Length: 97
Image (tube, rainbow, N blue to C red; front, side, top):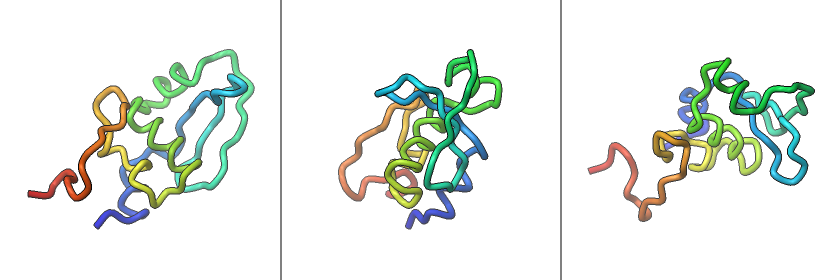
């Protein structure tokens, strides 16, 4: 069973994203229910690279702050190497036979 605690252990302390509506760069802190606006000339991707955050981790962090840290969307194990969500049939999860 995936728990919020086990999901959080797979995520970095901070990640960055771009708000689709405004184009603003935001910072997301692991486990927090909100995000913070960041004043910078760098893109979210550039900041994530500087901090060693993969696209998969960044997408999971954004999902966690928006949808909740307990959801499977916040689990980076449900993404491919490019940070794209992998859709699996119900019950077909990594590590399960």
